[in-house]
Image (tube, rainbow, N blue to C red; front, side, top):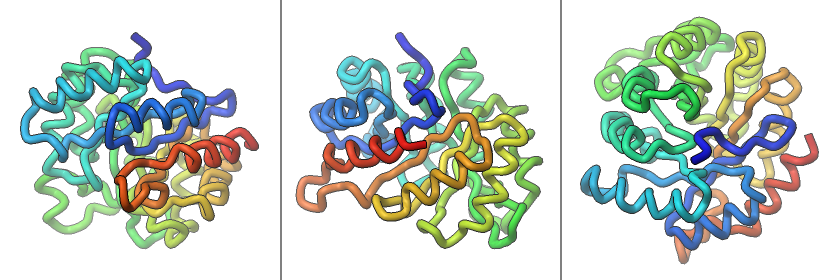
Length: 244
């Protein structure tokens, strides 16, 4: 079972949501396998139901599953860690304070685990207070490079920058990308990415020299009627990804 995402030769792999196994299969095909399919723990009432269902996804898409929180919800951190430990996916979404628990429970170093940090409003700093309790307290804005080394200490492999609000934090994002490149760390821009700004945002990370980039494109490409991610939009994003 492959435990690492299927990156393109340029180091880019897409992350989109799937609301069914059929939808996951369609998006996986549209991305030619260069994708991890997000399945949100927030949508399940128990660990057991999540594990059972996510194993169906794993079988359908060669384990290209991303165990999700659900809009970065810190309350899902513990459930994500427990479920990921059981299914051993290619990708795990975590709040900053949940990374070490996830890595320890996984028991291996191959699965990508991101650590969620939020824009601080100041270039060069990120807010790491994204955990169940810390997110309810004052912001903890620290240098990006320090956040990265802390994530490395905890076994993290990439920095999830959320919520980006599309292009609202581009100057901050440029500093984040530079720090990830300098520290040989993965980067996952998240929040408000769509078909109109995707190229601009990914270009910043590529130009900075980030080696592994996993952009998340969620609600903007989901059909409002069916709740499914649109495979044709995934195909468009793949075309853009291949241009870098």
